Image (tube, rainbow, N blue to C red; front, top):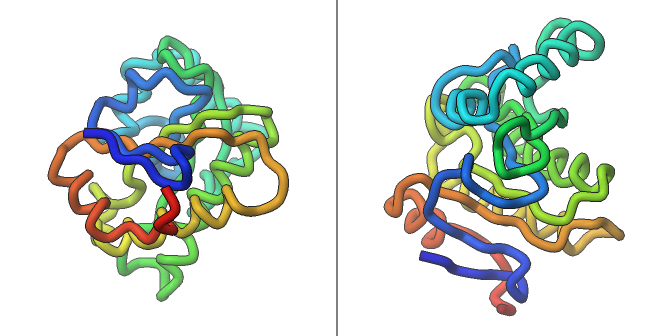
Length: 185
């Protein structure tokens, strides 16, 4: 299943994010950056030790107390087909004092900003915070689609393609029902 938006610049697909051939895949990380379950665990398993080594370096030198929610950092892609991994920490639903939507949007915006700062043109996102962090999928679809569209329509950047990669068809269908992209296709 592939749906496109914004003149083909945004694609919604079902697949395994660790197999995406893009400049960067986004990792729905935890603040420790040391790997975990779900997408985070899969990216670390497939990507290999080099990703973890670079995450440890980031923890030692930049984010000694962990990566704050909504922020993003970049590492190598290791053994992934993607050249880079952009790690971002999504909000845990109900635990951010009402700032969940703002922080979730920041994950997408900061990941795209970081990709652009590195001259990358294609980025693949998972559905940040909708797994173990319990963000309602319908609300996350609205927030993520608006954040990505706002970024793509903003000032100059290098991003040519954004993919939303869902592991299950039902999750992609939920996203498609609730996304808020402009209807120009």
